Image (cartoon, rainbow, N blue to C red; front, side, top):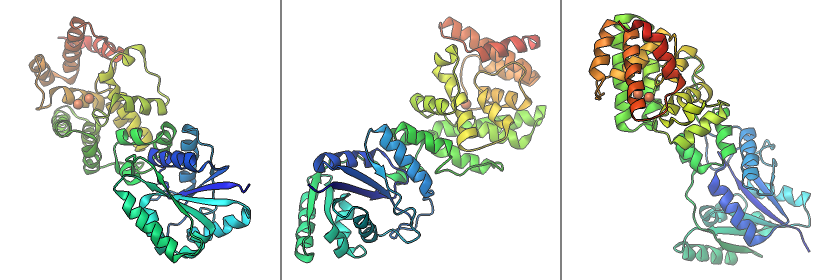
Length: 395
Ligand SMILES: [Fe+2]
Ligand SMILES: [Fe+2]
């Protein structure tokens, strides 16, 4: 019996759960002895400025196949070629490597409907059985018409339609989407790989402007939180004008302080894990403080913001710590008393902030500790350290 080889190609920029879902369904329908997943080199049909280098796409494919338990080979036949990737050329090369095999070329509906317009379709259709994924019942007629067309125009054409329930996932949306979207549509190892290699993002090794900060936080925050971030930046600059500090860093840190606050706890925990950060017992019990940890990790490890002062101001803006830097104090207090805030002890913290940042830190943490202990909630070490350290400013 001839060896059946399932061939599945694409840009895989990045590979997502929609791809592996299709691959699993095709595998079940065809029952091949070998699966070749072939990422494209230089795609002939679309110029992609955001296409990441082939070695990243290959690495992500391998991770994804491993995560999903799919026994398949990632072929570099197209990525290692200096020519443009054409399916007809690839199949011809594969025929030389596997002269006795039967090829099953698998593809989505859209590709199947246009295959007669590809480069040398007669070569493709003579070398492989074309397998098309049918996403929905409405597609049946379109696909049948295309099957008929191909049968009548290409000698020895062989094709099959495989029912594959549609799983909505698009690489474009993942590239442009939030961490929550990436966490939902990528396997964990692929999400980790994208995070660790800062793929699909601008990075800021050389510094970041206030305008860039706003553009970064806008898609990650709800409108109310975005406006809160602007209000915290405004208040932080007022405090900086009164008490001193680096104006530029104050604005940047304040704008970025809540960058992860509207990301799900589940995704934040992944980002914390990818950054090899161990949480303390009290932090694990306090989901509301996680965003300062995941936020700092996201800025440092994914966006490559290298300024340690800015990172630390984000890292400690909720709990504080003993002996805070001026920037940490400015962001912490601005976050507590920005004009959008409204809670019982607000007035006393605002009044303390007129006297000194240190006194405001003491008044603020005292009220947090009082409030949390009354509600029998855990208190994170950082909050206790802040209270103990700034107790000397109680008068
Ligand atoms: Fe916050
Ligand atoms: Fe905040």
